[in-house]
Image 1 (cartoon, each protein chain N blue to C red):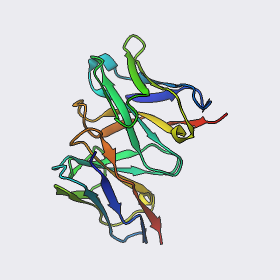
Image 2: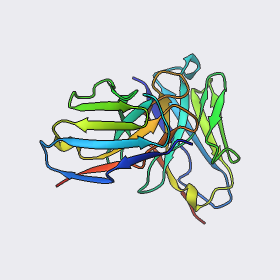
Image 3: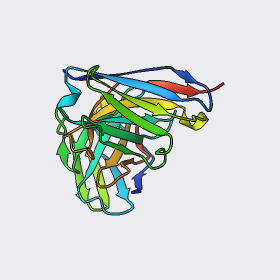
Image 4: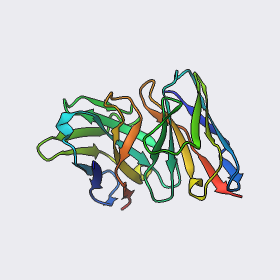
Length: 121
Length: 107
């Protein structure tokens, strides 16, 4: 059974860098699929942040592209998100997810439980 | 960016009733539209992919239809566990985008 689990600080100061990791169990991320970060501000809808595959090919949301980086560590079976220069607008639940068929632009059939990140001094 | 507009924002229905949710795209997404269900405190769950295909384990009371710019998610007879927020998502072009959601609440 494949599972995803987000981890990282729940509180980040404005202007600093948000760093989260998603640990995948039950599947080797070097075997395929694209791996995603998606966020949801409190009481609002979902926003795709970006994704990466085992070849380290990345796609980013243009609205965040200048501040975001997604990396993958196949030895640890993890992928990570870095978001720089955060503001209160980056306060959200951050989800990691896997796409349905590994095409890179697909629906998402597997999600982590989500982790709440608050940007505040 | 392809904007997805969901309507209505809130749907108030009773168990056993039929729910019809709409998702309209700002430009054609062909059939590349998915639907998700989200309950409070939980991650979204994939219900429908490519407009009309039920994901694994999704009950037959959930069905999707449409192509191009107009899509519908139908719940034929609402069960108590179906009261939730529903989102559509397109995968036709980058950036991947979601609709704003429709909340199905108990009347």
